[in-house]
Image (cartoon, rainbow, N blue to C red; front, side, top):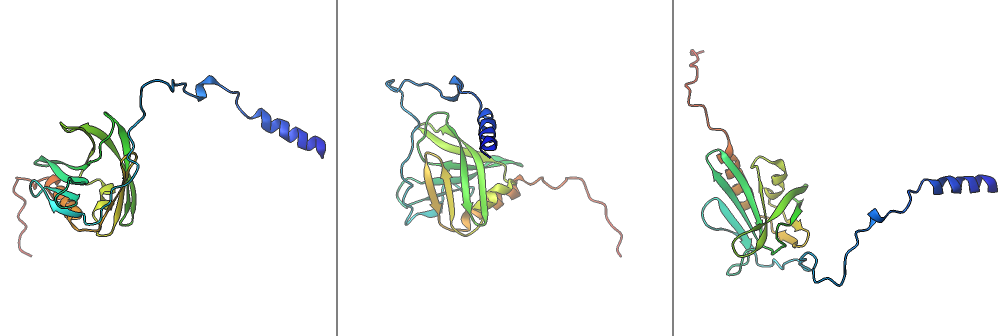
Length: 187
């Protein structure tokens, strides 16, 4: 029995790969570089509401009289549309991440990138209106939107995001053909 245990232990030890310098990236801790920006706490959203902003194709979520936390917009023209999500949380230049949407019966992840808006780097993503992952925003129950480094934003249930996304989907739908349809004889 002891020989079997020793043989088994030797076999398992042989399965481990050898150590390599490639496992750890060496960095100079004394260098003046700083790591990525991280917002330690999620924003307090008590009293925040959805409101129209800049026209019928854009809404913002925030506290009245204060900068918004989030904006949803239907951008583009004609049948070429996108739903644009902007999270007003400063981030690192050219950062890339994933935005998690949890709620309304959905758990979704969407790519989101840092974009310069003329004053700073904010999280912004553009998605096809018919992307079913956006359905997480269309429900009327609470939704948690999380971007690493930007905290979790708890969105109170509202039908306004769903209405905006449905409007964008209708605007992006292919237009009816301009050709006359066949006339069917009366039945």
